[in-house]
Image (cartoon, rainbow, N blue to C red; front, top):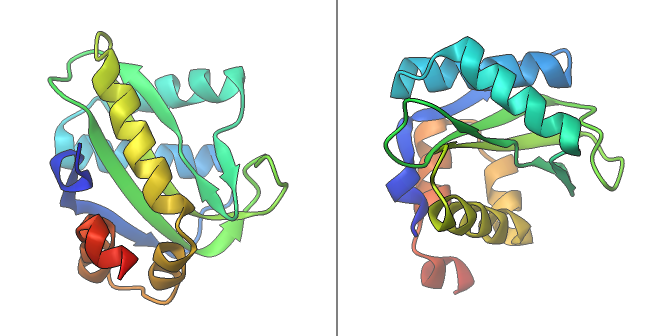
Length: 154
């Protein structure tokens, strides 16, 4: 599964400030509503429910909030870059400035896991994160995220 299959260019945003984890989840829900037509309240509730199971801040300034929602045909993503990092209860206790949210259909099964694995692999790459942090232009961020993995390794 390629990131370009789950992430639309218009779902990539740079956010000047999100005052809290909850506010960031609301921003992600609003973007999912605008770009994919998801009910923003339902999306935020699903993300909050998932966070209650355990934080999705995976470390090194990266968060991968994800949830299963109704009224969705396929897995979709929202990427935000925060100009000011926030506390996200990450495993390494570091503030988060990169968040990639995934929304999957209730019965997504393995597609949800494949998408999560692909995004996780991409954002574990220190070079990719360094490139993302060095840019504040949404189209450039989309290009970095969707570059062919073999190009990123070169």
